Length: 402
Length: 135
Image (cartoon, rainbow over all chains, first blue to last red; front, top):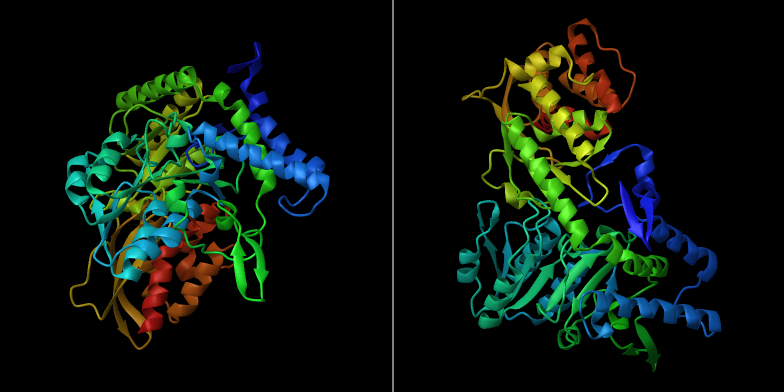
């Protein structure tokens, strides 16, 4: 496989060094592989920039802090947000969602209100809301599934005038189904519900332009979009971020304290970014964003989709396989009669890295006979040859167990 | 696949103890949080010995075979708790030799090389341990 940068054709394994290790990597939905330049960039931070940004009055610290803040602007531009002050850096997508639940909703939700989530959510966009509603004695409404996808008609009924916030996935980590965000946002606006989009998976596969879709909150992690671990993003409308009460207090977020006890906080978003930030990760994510239009573009998405159709066709030819996905980067399925974890040992023995089990999305499996799936998630470096190897392995599994 | 020994697959495909005991003295549910596999054990006990043990549940070949094998050996154990602890330690990598009555447990030896699957083999054993500890 080759990719083109600046007119030169390069080998995929030069872009993604992990590909040299001899694995077939089909787990990009868990984390995308990191480009060499992103890895170099994180290392470069420690070698050449080094400082704890936002502290110290030396020129080097000031310049480095400026560089990091430029990346905040880059992140906001990447999602079509016009105000970099609406971008909060967090630890990861889970952290971003928890922040909305506990810094905002917990302190602002009226007692007779409700919260709407769906049965398609990852635990990270499910458990924080369940806990919150239990703590406050507030109703949480769970939109059921229809044909393995969100039942939008049910959602329209469940979101009502008393819904304080609706929090839904932009793209399922189980099925890969891309949600009808426009429809959900329009329902929420009509009923007056706030809307959070968990874009953990979506961010890597669909252009997000906040000028076109207009959620109140949008969350994602850098590591699922060719960026480093340890960095999440929370976008929030500034008038709502102003209502946030920090969960974590301490360093970085306080400007000064007068008379021993009067605390003066920094402006947003610093007020919500307590403690030392992961500047090296932010710096590396800047490099990711520079590279993204070369990795994520229509041609590459089309290539993933065409490989996905080839995979689905091949699975259907094998037969005796239940497929939960439509063509896209994520294909989940079960080999009928074989437990996904038994299948996983066979993939493992062929150095195929994929995911089996409930994928941190157990509500999906409620009332289903199976408690898990086999998930293949494709990226631009995957090939037909690799798909063929997976199919051969599935045939061996069937032969052994059935 | 070296993990899926013939004996193990025999217990998975043709289980001997996969049924409930309607008048059991004790029953206990166990769940493997990493995969959602669930098992229910039904036990008849007498003076610290397990007289009869059966199970129902859904799970992978490893967990179901492990349950069936557990049910087949536990009745012969003079000190069931010791056998359970030995098995748990064995799966966790300890070099344990089982006495003649329990050599069947050695089909799980390979498990030591599949750390991600240990919890499957251990599910029924941890469940019986909890059952005996509670009662």
